Amino acid sequence: MAHNAKAIPSKLNTISNETSSSSDAGTLALALKLTPIGENNMRKKSAPPTGAKRKLKTLPLEFETFEDAKAKRIQLIRRLAKSATPVSNALANELAACRKQSRCGSGACPVCNRAFRLRLASEVQRVRPDAFEVIRISLIPASFRVEVYDLPAFDLLRWVSSRRRAFQRALPKEALFVGGVDISLNTFENGDPHWCFHLYGFVLLPKGWGVQNRSKMRRMRAELERRCPPVPKHRRIGAERVLTVGALDSENFDGAFLYAHKGGFYRRSRYAYTREKTGKRSTNAEPQAIPRLAALELSIFLARYRLGSRLILIGFRRHGSRFDRFTLCRERDFQSSQNDG
Ligand SMILES: [Zn+2]
Image 1 (tube, rainbow, N blue to C red):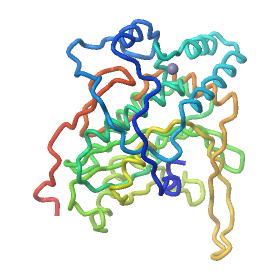
Image 2: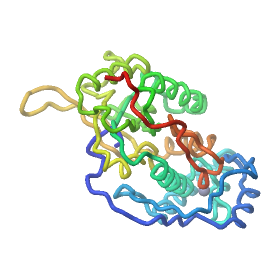
Image 3: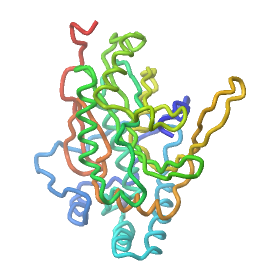
């Protein structure tokens, strides 16, 4: 799980940028014409050239293969077709029509989400500074909870933009941020199922900022608590960690930041146990597959939004609306402010 520091792979693999979903400029035009919903078709003629050769330096070890994503899509189409409501039928048809030459771009499509993540990885690696310090943040905000079957009433865009503003206020002015929203179906002792909207991301700071400086880290943590309050104590389950702020070796950033926009969704099954050494009560969480009906609810919810809607960028600007063709640029100089000591 993204919130768990153990989930970050210690070994990273290096691969070339092999985007099996890419197509040339001619087929791109076709794809834009055929893209049904979920993608903004208003691509300006003056958009920056996107055919430039890009090198992807690093991906997480367990980055899904194209075949994995395709298998997930087939399973989802079958489930949607089985449930046979007008909404699920429409989404099943949309996903079934997703082809190399005309990607569906649906927020629910595992293949398109993979293409989005590949693009994000290469763009972030291209525009990030060469030297920087990194802080990894995991935060379960007070407004994390949505009841099962209530996703249709939840406004993801509004929630993301208000959390983004909160982060912008909390972080130092010179900081860059790449983060996103992870959605899980949480249960405790197999009861109380609910959707959890969890923020996860990486703060990039100029070299020398001082991520090893405890008082600076405490201040950042306090600002996050103030601007983007995590789940209050009385609503936490056991020893649940609702806010973690920790330094990450910048060498591990390229392989880790895609956790901010994951390729899959899970059920987090929490249970209580007693620690052998201390006798203290604690809780643990295991990732499991989301049950069928809830998985359908989540897919239909995700399909309402463009790919990238769960992404939170601060200090970067995104150009281009295509999920697999956008470019990023940095909005400002990346320098330490004079009076941050
Ligand atoms: Zn697709």
